Image (cartoon, rainbow, N blue to C red; front, side, top):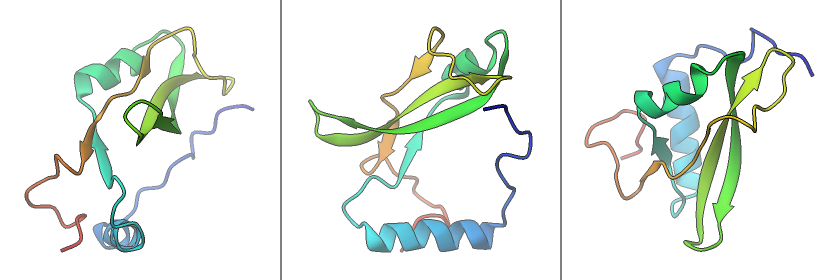
Length: 105
């Protein structure tokens, strides 16, 4: 698989709210979001040959919590599994933003 610079689409706040609110309504006991610092994100993005990110859904068997795994992707579309991989992000809940339109009331 080769990379595609068109991957991802800029959306409006209204669209984002529709998506996040629908998910939160359908999954009230799920994790709604994750926070990652730019410092850690840059550990992946600044690797030589990294052109993007792949986000994997995961599940931590010890904590019994959903999580995500981030890995860099090279120009051929391959995961950079010999490089930096990230997990253990700050999840919402419990650490949710105090005021965000992306959070359903």
